[in-house]
Length: 327
Image 1 (cartoon, rainbow, N blue to C red):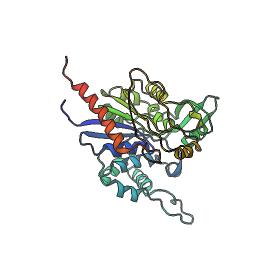
Image 2 (cartoon, rainbow, N blue to C red):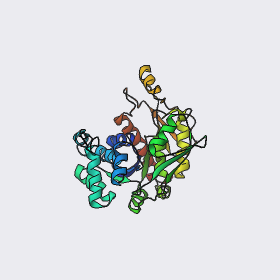
Image 3 (cartoon, rainbow, N blue to C red):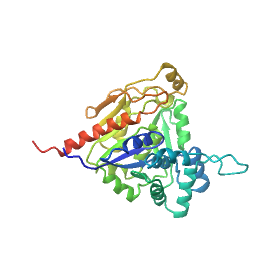
Image 4 (tube, one colour):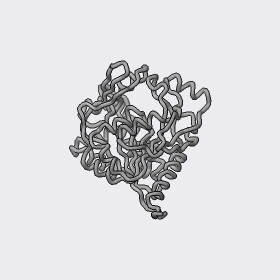
């Protein structure tokens, strides 16, 4: 096998995707492309979307910071929130969210704003919003109730309503430039991240499954460490694999799964938030299991170096199989 630069797409949002990007960006054999969810309706991002009519900048900003040349300093500066000032509409927003929103308003193009931020931070990779059209995430639950907006979808899930369907209103289309970038990838990593509000919404965007169909290499799913809310009681990593496969229209090649648990008091703290360790469940026969001890601290985050090495092992194996001479 001859090593060469491999184009890899990392799909997701929230805090999970930046962990993947931050761990992989030091690998000289990878050209990273982050494809980021754009349907955040809470916090600073949701407020800027409502007040300024801009796209929610938060997840894109976090991914750009993870790929920045000087990540620690960039995070310290751009994730700081403006102080509370009397009658100030800017109070509570992060400097980075405001910067990206201002760049969008100035350029009139969110893709141009993201590219400008990437150049400013010296990012070691590209960041792509999955769509630049405004839409709200909607969900239908087992009891036929519905919710609109990411915050409301999460709230109903937390109260114990199991999600049976997700869609975007209005329906949105992938940008042609982003579709071309995805079609040029050699492998895809999905997650970790909030399953129903960060991961699955990406694949409800029209054109994303079609672009993924042209990716020749492996599709890797990084399983979350925890379930999210009482509505995910009994949900397993195997369930996640099958739902992703239905959403993208092709098999998941490998699942990265955590097999370690923290101290009982840590688990009790998360249980009080209706979050429990994700069980493995049964996997489709075509999905390879790659398990290890990825939860190493009291906070539910994948250990960056361990996750990065595990992902590289799967990617290198896929490259070797693709380039092996015929028997």
